[in-house]
Length: 263
Image (cartoon, rainbow, N blue to C red; front, side, top):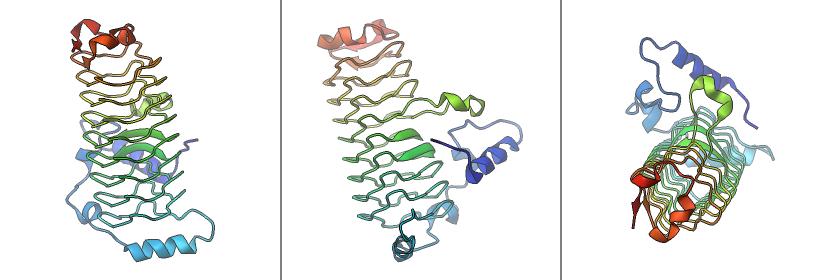
């Protein structure tokens, strides 16, 4: 279960003290200098990370609030590791095991998680635009990350919860953002994507069996070839979405059905 902690409270206080125009809760991109060393360099090496993992003595290693940008951390066992508020831009986690890891409020822009296992991981209000999750396993994960433009081909989300966090309304609507993400062949069986931003996402040939997209914004999304077995599209905005004519009945409860492109 998510609980508040010092890094998240510090970020919330910092945003609250900003003058004039308030920032969107999940869009902190304008509040940081992404060209600064803090977001482009690493303060440790892969060897340091491996040593910390060895020295953890059965307890999860803690890399919270660390800069690990650009490191090659591929094929490591990072299960349960705390990366809270860490900077992981362009970091290579390909093939690594991050089951149960905490990736809350990380910056992992264009990071590589291809083939990685993130079962039951926690990604709260994380910035992961343009990341590569091809073939990764996020089954059972809790995800409210900005994954705009991410490549998630054949990624597993079985039983994952990507729905909006309705307990944090004072911070604004925190949800998974999959805008323009490539989800070709992804497995969303029994996943929850309620109220998410799915605009222009590519769900081609994906498995949405028993998944919920209720009240999500799926305008412009591509659902052609998707498996839609008992998929919940109640009040889902499908304006300009591309759907198969043979699948029209699956979208009977969707919003703006007349504006969808039936092909």
